[in-house]
Length: 299
Image 1 (cartoon, rainbow, N blue to C red):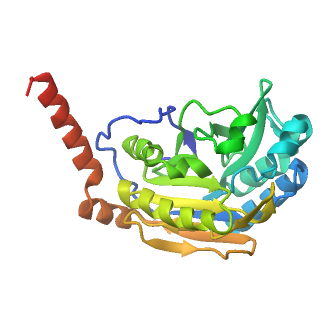
Image 2 (cartoon, rainbow, N blue to C red; image 1 turned 180 degrees about the vertical axis):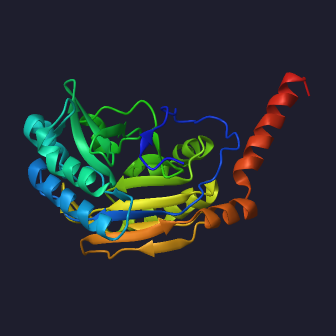
């Protein structure tokens, strides 16, 4: 059982068939961070991120997840106008030193949202910083929302990582509105679907409370949401970072308007019980195999 985060092979949107991968053996304590970022100020947001990583580590969390584009603020027009100042640079960015130091000094893994400027292109990304302070992997958002398509390039593949025997599939905001995105992670053996997002007051709150329990129950995985609070990029965020159990029930939920950390344990016993009671993943695989065999046999 690994005690450090490691990237797993990139997964396509549709995922690969589930092949009886083992369940985790012990709980994993995670933290979902919510706060208001400074618009386009990577250094200031990195300092906030580092402080929250240290706070999460003090609570015993092994993994802390931050909202979408937290290191830069949402701010698409500002980032497009000044990508060198307002986006994280994909070839290494010294402004992230406080984040990498906090991970290394506390032994904590962080999934941090950022607009990333790489090869002359902009991406909406999740940076996974390992417990040693090194970049483990980077996931680029696959399903861009409306005006984002005018500024950012679409990510080509999904990404998963493993920590303490838990396999975690990454998503960013609008990804979570598409059942096939979380399903790809589940079919790739993931036990949790981990998402940094920007959901706004009103319809965004309704969407998050509809999508996340559905993604959890449909795939019998934990679903983890880290959301902004306050205003960013013209949006008024609704907070409410939360964790849902593999049966779709709410485990814990943060304030709608106050910064802070939501800490929860992902429990392998709960995961096993949910998958025994709701065998959708195995039944889906069996049904798909039966349809394929029927086709090949000319049935």
